[in-house]
Length: 193
Image (tube, rainbow, N blue to C red; front, side, top):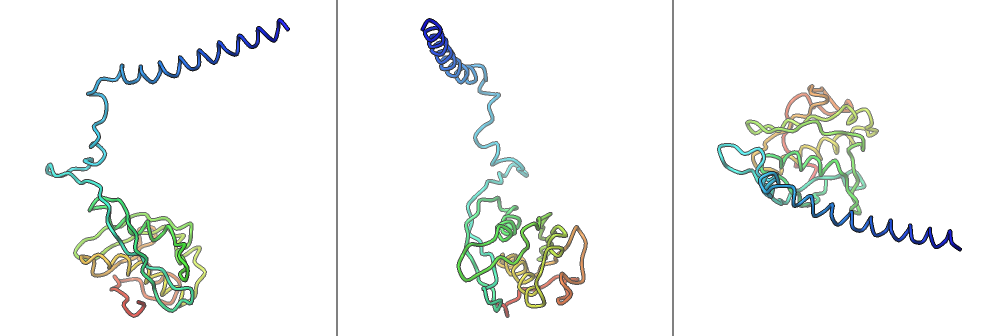
């Protein structure tokens, strides 16, 4: 009985110390950190400013394209992403790579595929993927056309993008699966819409 009372008292003491310790810890963080040491709320949004103009993240609507489940055409899926104006191409490609759960369409890009980079210059979007794009791709000629079309049509949704050059590990490739020439920039594939 005496041991139980001692253990109960010890448990209550530990609970009290824990409660007091946690509260004091939170207050001390705020009290010890001068306002100048705390990051301003806009630091993250203003990171990467050029000539004093802030590049703030904003929510924009994009369209990404997936093949219908019959492999006959591409279907646009509208999404909203938060990105900077300079990051919109990357955000669109990452959204495409994330796949779809919509009925009647399928994800064509292999799951392990990584986006290495995407940049737009002189109307050409250059998009670089990991080799998993082809290594883990199991489609034939129609699948390859849908794969390429989903990438090209997603990026050419941006009016400044006139064509798309697909790279693997930073290099141009003649074809992704042996059926479609990807050695040069490709224009919007309207025949798939």
